[in-house]
Length: 60
Length: 569
Image 1 (cartoon, rainbow over the protein chains, first blue to last red):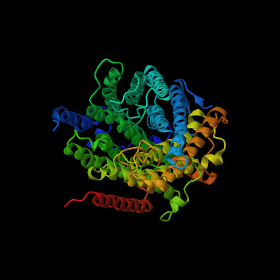
Image 2 (cartoon, each protein chain N blue to C red):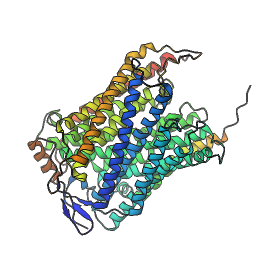
Image 3 (cartoon, rainbow over the protein chains, first blue to last red):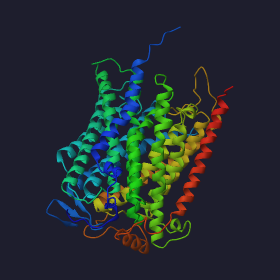
Image 4 (cartoon, rainbow over the protein chains, first blue to last red):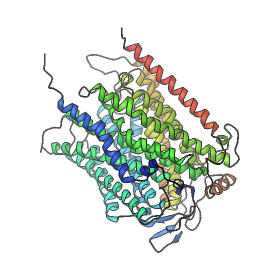
């Protein structure tokens, strides 16, 4: 590892045993996947399906 | 100048951090263009404020619409996203002791965003795109407006991709130990939300562009709104993540603070990543095509997990400041605030933006986002009142505070007129607060957003909103003060960048008194644990209870307001 001065802003999480949640937080690719897929399903796909299935309004 | 190293980087004279020279150039360029966009938006803001102030009524309806389009695009999209690109370069390289991964992606990012911004502004200024920022179909702009927006979005996607590449290179080259720093994690959350945002923008705007050049039928209005708000609101959630990351960064730079609990702070960012993009639904709450289940799940259920994240940050940021101040020996319930460096514009911007975002933007946002309450607020001036407290009073002010450190540390130029710089965050914060309160009160009486003729002159059904006149005057006066505060920031920053004294070869001139600065520098270079220091953030706990009380009063007052107009027997 290259030398880096000790400045508080560059500090990462504590060393020691790694909790499963920390492993998740340390995986940017999994976070990227979840961050795109979860809201896309909940907001976009669900909303899109509702719009597609909406019946045409009939004028009285 | 700082010490040059063999890998095209230098060592910062103030922090000792290694600064990749290519990243430094890109940070500078993105920041300069961001400030230019801010200037355009501020000039438009003067026109809007002096029109909403009915006594003056400066602009005719068409010009008001055009100025609003210019203001919205430059303030909400261009100024913010160029600044965020600068933050991504800073977080992905400087804070990770890393070099920039890809010149191609980086210059592609800057070039495409610059061209896109220029095309969109040309289109709006020449009257070819009087469509507001939202550009709802079937309202149609000329083709270059959509193409410019698409190019801008692709540029932002390239910048985001480069940030992920920087993360990959840093991990591969082992430039840091353990987890990435919290500020970088905040930038990562912003970048993830940016990917969702840009993809939705592409899906909404590519067909719309094809329609504008006659290659396909107009997109369905309901479909467009669903997709466009997947771009429109999440682009402001990128701001939230970046702003929170900047809060943590400024906390360290100004008082030597450390995040109170890294795991809790990161978990809060995770909640943002998973749930904050549901806020798009707020704009669709009166759309007929979507079910009540879709609306309630995406606002009143899942979104509350993102609100929880904001409440966590709303506690941990001031608590971190408090613990750092206590570590310096500033005791008492609020002694840590009394002894804070209020004359440091970085700290002033941090704390004022925190208060405006929490007490103003947060409380109103949760309330307006409630499905039932929204019906009495939708499309009223209450909505701009809310988002001026989040995006302007929150994010923009935080970014201004960041600039007071970026210019000396990255441009290596000192600010002049330092007395004016010290009060600038207060001027801007005061103006935004007055304006937003005026908007909220006027909107509560039913004053609509987006057009200045609030009485609907010549309409078949007239509206008498004369009771709102005093509040509209507040909007005008507050807006004028806020725009003046922003203009002061721009002039100070432009002067510093081009005419400021160089600080190459020495540390930046501190904004703080010598004794304050010494305590902060000592704390910054000390390896201490805020959780193990036995220092309780009791003052922050009191402020938090005050926030919750204010929220409860405002929230239930709105249910009462709803009950007053919607009688259920």
